[in-house]
Image (tube, rainbow, N blue to C red):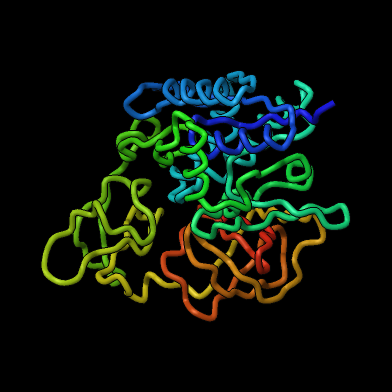
Length: 353
């Protein structure tokens, strides 16, 4: 009997090509379309109806079954609630990280196993390597599309059940193959925005769920230069939307003082207040399980698409770690993830505190 693989199909080109590749490799492939947002599921911002049509069209073309499943309650409880709590606390969360850990590789994996899957697959650009019964998360061959940063919270059980068919491919080759196969979504643009919620005016979206409290914008020495609309709307390093006029260089967000409801801003892209030479991270996840990485020099990312940068991992204490950088890093942002690498292997990481 063929091994049954359930692949998450979003309606995009990546998961579509991944599904075709799996079928070509001889697996019994079943597509699964996840609907995870219902609050305002309109075509203006959340294109789930169009995406489902695309996913079904691809499944019919390549000759596989597909079903739709609703994980909206799981998404609200496990991801969106945390998302709002983090913004309310003045941090800037990355919902894609938690969405992968709690929905795409937990709720989805549980459902797939119930319908007899041996493994699951997604269209992520990453790789899994097994060595002596342990599974390693590795960067994709296409460095410009590598998504291991978003997957660092996965564990051994999840990785051992997961295939990433696109991990060895370049994005341009995926597009070319999709066009050659005649997939109806071969030219569809990649999705951006909040995981499963889509692209939308972010400030207006948050206002529907969280109360706002305007307050002063001040320089580090206490000079008032404007009024912010609510600390949750701003992130460290932000330039756009501050509304500060006057001469001189552009203004940037350098910090948040929650106790005084004050947004700290500075002038100049390279202002010293925007740089830090260390960070603390909490809520750690190490992919190997145990033991955690030994104190040493590794490479790290403190945000997606940031080039790997050397760092020193200090001894772990009480569920947190300290990363120190020989070259100060710009706009280290509480709520984002610090992810550690050893060459091509993603070791894990934590939430910047």
